[in-house]
Length: 283
Image 1 (spheres, rainbow, N blue to C red):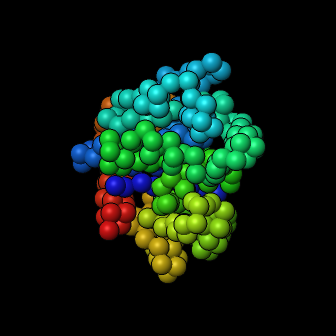
Image 2: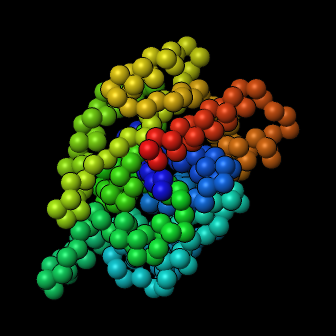
């Protein structure tokens, strides 16, 4: 089974667009894909995929309720189909208060002498719902900030795909990959088990024409991480995806009046990236 979280300290639409695109590419080769949106922001994966979810309905069942073991229904009822062949568990406004909710749930469990690990609830929910038997690929898209959303995403997947922007902060992310992974391994827990986190790919994206793609790729590879491709700046393509609420491939195939060579090259790289991630993740 292939599981990973897309995470970037820089945040931005590139991380979420990449998550949607990889889900699309995995689906195209016959994989059964579930995406999980852990980002409480409105500009999240749920919005990009054009999913009609009751995120502002406080009475609706949602993922946050399941993470604190206070569901209003079956988890599988939260899973929605997208127009792109894969499924999504949408975000909800209650996810904004996830940290406080998990803290309260942990305290209540302690008062009752029950075990409750606030960083391991998503993994618990997915296992109890039988998700691993229904899907062979799970992609989780958490927010860019460290906290319970990210820790649950990493604990559930144990693998990261990290988009890296060609900026000073982006380059610092390359230099700090080891610290990032070590820090996450030290934060999350699973009883007495030693949690190990793998990086399936580092993906330089937003590379300009004057930038040296090979430089970024080599920087990542020199630190022992896979870096299959670098993606050039594609503002028109990615902005179009958000406007039309679709994946990059769907946008090119349904919203472009003609195929642009540079966009087709980007789609080929995304296809290659998905294949490489699958190969590395299932070794």
